[in-house]
Length: 214
Image 1 (tube, rainbow, N blue to C red):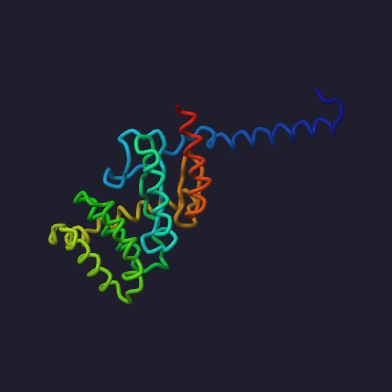
Image 2 (cartoon, helix red, strand yellow):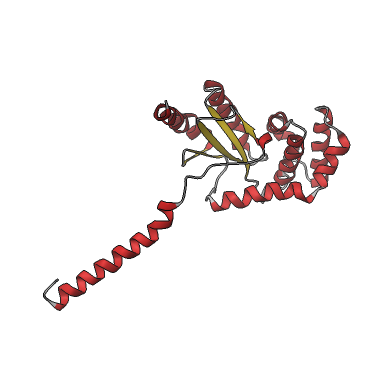
């Protein structure tokens, strides 16, 4: 034991600080690695991918549209090993983003999520500048019609509050994961923001994870 009062005080302080650090770090150490999940129609790739990319995206975000081809390229490089889970991160300042997400959910329930996903991004310059939500909603319905989706079922799905709740749940989760920009890709616990990081650092992360699992 320390012999002087000062040394005893210092020892006590160090013990308290050490204990506090352990308690603070404990939950973080005990928390299992986050495994992204979502409805089956929002997943793409093999049934049991070795690496999963979580994509937090906003359909009205130009940067998200720009990143889509790079994500597609990564999936094509590793078709049997890498999968993606789409997660909504619609921003309040994008007036049509939530409704676009709802429309994509309805297409997903009809088995066409990724086709509708691609269509939303490819036509983004047209619908993103519409002045009213009603005009955008009509555009989303028209897109579904052009894809051959059941008109009544799509319309009913779009009006169902439960569909919007699916989008809201993802937005809440994005906040919990400190997703402050779109697109954000989380790969093996690390995050990559934007198309440039995805196609460089993100691709490196995928390759490194695959090497570890080979």
